[in-house]
Image (cartoon, rainbow over all chains, first blue to last red; front, side):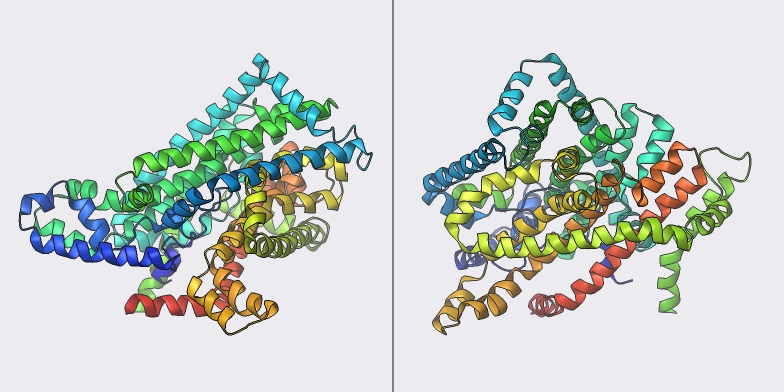
Amino acid sequence: MTDESVNPGPEPRRKTPETREEEAHRLHRWESSGRSDHRGGVPGRHAGGSTSAGLDVATRPDPAAPMSSVAQTGATGRATTSGPGRARRQRRRGWSTRLLGAAGVLGMLLTWEIVPRTGFVNERFMPPASEAIGGLISNFGLTQFWIAVLDTMHAWALGMVIAVALAVVLGFIIGTSPFLRRFTNSTIEFLRPVPSVALIPLAVLLFGFDIESSLMLIVYACFWQVLIQVLYGVADVDAVAMNTARSYGLGPVARIRYVIFPTALPYLMTGVRLAAAVALILAITAQLVIGTPGLGAEIASAQSGGNYVAMYALVLATGLLGVLINLVMRMIERKVLSWHSSVRTEVAA
Amino acid sequence: MKYIRSALHIVALPLILLFIWFISTLGEPNFFIPTPQQLVETFINTWTADRFLGDVFPSLGRLIVGIALSIVVGIVGGLLIGSFRWLRALLEPTLEFFRAIPPTVLIPVLMLLVGVGDDMKVSVIVLGAVWPILLNTIEGVRSMDEVLADTSRTYGMNRVNTVRYLILPSAMPQIMAGIRQSLSIALILMVISEMFASTEGLGFAIVQFQRSFAIPEMWSGIALLGFIGVLMSFIFQLAERWILGWYHGLREIEQSA
C-alpha cells in the first residue's frame, strides 16, 4: 500500500486558498518569516521557545488548515466555517445574519406549531412546538432530568478521556516510527470502518446495563477518529525542522515536545472535536438501545410509556446538549491553539 | 523484493493477531470468545443464501436507498442554500441544531410519525446521513474561488453550465469528504434502526443471536458488519479516485511546483 492510504481521514491540508486576500496574507507571512530567519543568528533562540513559531511560518504556510478549511466534520462535527475571511465578513454583516438566523429558527418553530394544530399530523404523535418546549423547560426543574444529563455527560467525558489518551500515546508511538506505520497500516485500515454499534451485543453480554457498555462503544468509535488525526499530524512534521532540531542537539524527548507536538496539536484538536460529537451520539445510542441510565434511556421510557410530549422535550434536550458540546469544544480548540497562526490571524484581522 | 516487503508489511500484523487469538483460545473453551476455526465454521453455516436473502439484502437495500437519497438531497439542498447568502443566513442556525441532535434519538420519533416499516428505517438513515453532505456542500459552494466565479460570469456562462462546470467541480472535494462521513453514519443507523421493532435485517439478527446466547453466531454477525464497513470504505475510495482524480492530480502538481 502506498503512504497515501495511511491517512484516509478527511484530507486535512488546505486545498485551495479561500480568497485572494488570504493568499496574499500567507505570502506576506512567508516573506517576513524568511527575513526573520536571515536576521536571527542566535542558536538559543531557535532551539528554545521559538521552535514552534518558526515551524509554522517557514515550513508550511498554514499548518492549521485542517481545522478551518476542508470539511472536517466527522460523524457530527460541524462543517467548518471559520477562517480569517469568514471572520471579517461576519463582522460586517453580523447583525443581519443573526436576525435572519433567528427568523429561520422562529419559522421552523412556527411550522412545527402549525402542522400538528391544523391536523396535518396527528397531534398526539407530534405535539406542537410550544408543548415540547414547555416540557423541556419544566424538565429543567426536575432532578431526574439532571441526573440523566449527568449520567450521559459522565459516560461521554470518561469515554473521551480514555479514547484520547489511548489514541495520543499510540499515535505518537506509531507515528514516529516509519516501520510501525507500515506495519500497522493494514490492521488500522481494516478495524477503522468496523461500525462501533456492531459491538453493542458484545457490550451487553460483557457488561450488561452498566456504564462500561457505553464506554466500550464510545472508546472504540472515538479512538479511531483521534488516532487517525494524530498519525496524520505526526506524519506532517517538516523534515527540515526535524533535522534542524537534531543538529541543535535536541534529544528525543525535546524533539517530541518542541517539534512533533506543536505540529500535531492542530490535528489532534480536530480529532478531539470530531470525537466529542461522536461520543455524544454513542453515549445516547447506548442508553437508548441497551438501557444504561441517561438521556437515551429516558427517551426510550417516555416513548414506551406513551408520554410523547416528554419524548420530544428530551429530543430537544439532546440537540441542545450537542450544540453546547460543539461550542465548548470549539472554544477549547481556540484556547489551546491561541499561539497558532490560523487562530492569531483570525483575531488580528 | 520491494513487493514482497510491502506484502509482508500488510499481512504481518493481522497474522500475528490471529496467532495470538489462536493461542489464547487453545486452552479451556471460553464462553465469550470462540476459537478462529469455530468462528469460520459458524460464519459459513450462519450466513447462508437464505439468510442473505432474508436479512442481509433487505438491510443493504435500505442502506443503499438511504445513502442515495442523502446524497441527492444533500447536494441539491446544499447547492441551493450555498448559492444564496440570505438563505444560508436564514437556515444555518436551524440546520446546526438539527445536525447536533444525535440521529439515533430520532428513531422513536419516526416510529411514531412514519410507523415501523422500511420507510422509517430509510428516513432514519437519511435524517442522520444527510447533514455532513448538506453542510459540506454549502461550505464547498461558499468557498468557491472568486477568480473562477468572476471569469465564468464574464464569459457569460448560463446557470446550468455554471452549476455543471464551475460550482459542482469546485465543491466536489468537500462534497466527497461529506459523503465519506455519511457512509459510516448510515451504516450505524442501518444497524440501530433494525434493533427497534424489527423482524428482519442484520441488526435484528445480531441482537437475536445475543439474546439467545448464540455467541459464535453473534461474533460472525459482528464480523459480517465489519466486512460491510470495510467494503464500503473500499468502494468509496475507488469512487473518490475516479471522481476526484483530476483534483488529486492538480494537487500533486501544485505541491511539486
